[in-house]
Amino acid sequence: MSYHFLLDIALILISTKLFGLVTRRFQMPQVVGALLAGLLLGPACLGWLQATDFLTQIAELGVIVIMFTAGIGTDLAELKQTGKSGMLVAVCGVLVPLVAGAGLMALFNRGEFAHPGNVLLQNVFVGVVLTATSVSITVETLKEIGKLSTKVGNTILAAALIDDILGLVCLTIVTSLAGADVNIWIVLLKIVGFFVFAAVVAFGYNHLMRWYEQRVQERNLRRFPIAAFVLCLLMAFAAEELFGVADIIGAFAAGVIVASTPKAGYIESKFSPLSYLLLTPVFFASIGIKVELPGMDGMVLLFAVLLAVVAILAKLVGCGLGAKLCGFHTRQCVQVGFGMACRGEVALIVANKGMAMGLMSPLLFGPVIIMVVCCAVLTPVLLKAAFKGEEKYAGFEQSDLVDQYERKEQLDMVQERLLQAEEKRKNARQ
Image 1: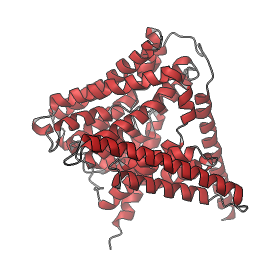
Image 2: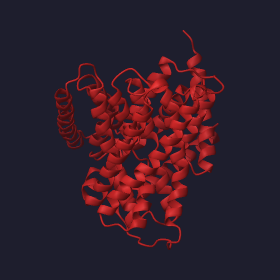
Image 3: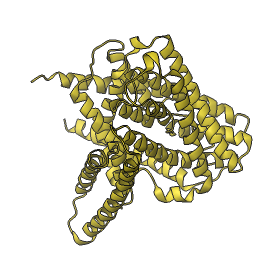
Image 4: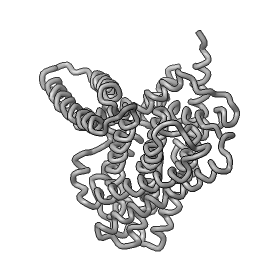
């Protein structure tokens, strides 16, 4: 038995942390640093790390946990209260990038870009990669310029939550159609069946948790995260094996189910160390490891540049159009569009899933990562430019969504201080 995997994990953890700290100093998400670490240590540069079955399986578990925690953080009640503004911005912000990405891929899907399989689904899948929005950078930028609690800020937060869900629905449909000898009606029936199954599981899980709260006197809180993780794994398995739906959809659905239980906050806090310490770094580093930059010739680099441009413009046009239909002024439409332009972990997760299912050529992984990094770097710059000249805190209006982000930030700070205090106590004992 080889123990080289221990060295691989150690290299991934230390490199992703160091690069994450560097990118954070430049006000970029730490996920960019993790990607750069994978690129540097992988075959694209130094070649110290190679994609192995073990790393691939750990990365798959990592993406399941990421989507599970994303589901826990989704507030369905808040989504219902956002009204037509968040929904219209989200719908337009999904449809326009979907069409634009598919159109761009259709222009390039020949020669070295050609990949075995259904060409139409491959084209549409590139559009699916562009649908999801990552608002972590946007939130930090809006807070910095005092615009998070404005009408524009509230709309961006609500639309981002909705368009991630719509993007996952698109992913479900496209990946389901990717099977051999597919009947569209059977695919749609399976998708509907999965959501019915998820609703039944939600009903049963919620009632079980309520019964446990009421009947069991000596409750062990550690059982709640264990039960939630079991639900996550079972839902992911059932989605992939029984309904032909991507496992990350099952994990996300499990997270949404857990989010409606009283112990959701406690459960999420217990998953953070698991994700932070091992699974998330391995997942994002593994994506960088899979990239082969030497294969990126002039045409691939051209595609990467155009993909980044289309990614930003499609959100600007789509989300801006949705905002315009809701009565926003032109400048506000631009602000909403740039605020929704950032891409992040969801785009990488979708791309990784597509490559595993043969919907995307490995040649396109580099361009997708370049697109994510470009969007992460340019979004704060464009957003600040769009708000330039406006009075700070103009149009301030508090919302539950902003409260949710602020509470989560405060909870993270408290947890970090508790961990530091515990570390100091341990050092003192030693």
